[in-house]
Amino acid sequence: MSETAKIAGSAEAEAQQQSNSTADAGFLWDFWYPALRSDEMRGKKLVTAMLLEVPLVLGRTTDGRSFAMRDSCPHRGIPLSCGHFDGKTVECSYHGWRFDGWTGQCVEIPSLTSQDKLKVERIFAGHYPCEERDGYVWVYMTAPGALPPEKLPAVPELAKFGARFKKTHLFCDLPSHVDHGIIGLMDPAHGPFVHQSWFWRSRRSIHEKQKAFEPIPHGFRMSPHSPSSNSAPYQLLKKMTGAPVTTTIDFVLPNMRTEIIQTGKLWFSSLTTITPFRRDLCRIDFVAAWNVPLPVFVFRSFAKTFLRQDQETMIQQSEGLKHNPRLMLIDDADRPAKWYFALKANLLEERRTGEPKAHPMSGPITLHWKS
Ligand code: FES
Ligand SMILES: [Fe+2]
Image (cartoon, rainbow, N blue to C red; front, side):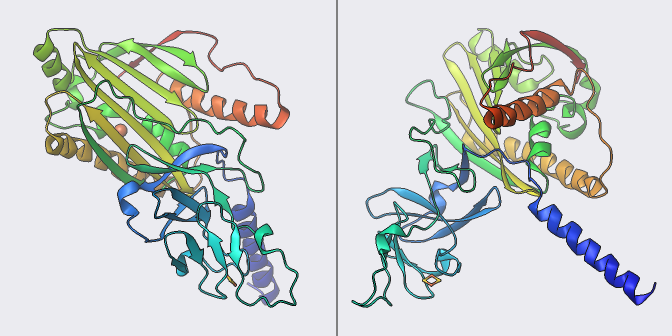
């Protein structure tokens, strides 16, 4: 290769790389996302996280309010997490500017003298609404350059059906774009292949199923139904109460699956989210509560096995996706994935035009697949 061709080639590669990093990452802004678990934030410790490729620094003020700022000093960009937090204000490590944790407002610039007219209180560090729920610190990710709405939507919350219950959290990182994480989460056909276990099911137990779905705002619901007859734990539940077992599974944008299982007075409820850190990395967070007689450690070991199986699959898939293969979505097993993509496209279009779009499902529908 001639020297000029080599240079042109590397310039092209650089341009490509640049356009990759500025191309739309396919994130959904203006939603709550779980940034980290509440117990990771202790005392006056500053903690870092990343959501939608925005670096964040989080902490909790001495009066107990959690906050989230862009982890970048508005003066010269050094991460604020390199600085010091006194329980109320964050002091930048470079020139000592201080910012109120709760509002992001600048409260002091040590280099100013009586000669200076700079209005310190008009300077703000990037700042996001932040609330704790179900053991997670949720951050409302406003679109770049936009302000949060006057009235924020409610923070997502795990459904509970009584005051006494057990509860647990699990999480794992997935080396893929959030879309792949989400369609994997809603994918009914991988069960017999990925989740074979003695306690759950075997590959031979694959059989034909039909499930009713209905549209819900920004999502879809698997209508209340009796769960798979080939899953041992459901069989056990049914024996315990003698009452029918019903399961309702919802998916709602941007990234949330909820599942509620009830039989007689017993219940189990879970909330699973897939949160984009970067365009090539997301995290699955799972929080569950239940009053069925199931010890936490037993449940955790089963749930961990499941998550690990999904994670291993996603790691393998990410290897394949590096080569930009053409992919397909088939009916009916991939219909939930098609709905997800359509819901997402509709939402972006609605936000762009201000015009409401019709739900991709015209009404209730029954899907058929084998799993
Ligand atoms: S960079 Fe933060 S105070 Fe200068
Ligand atoms: Fe799975």
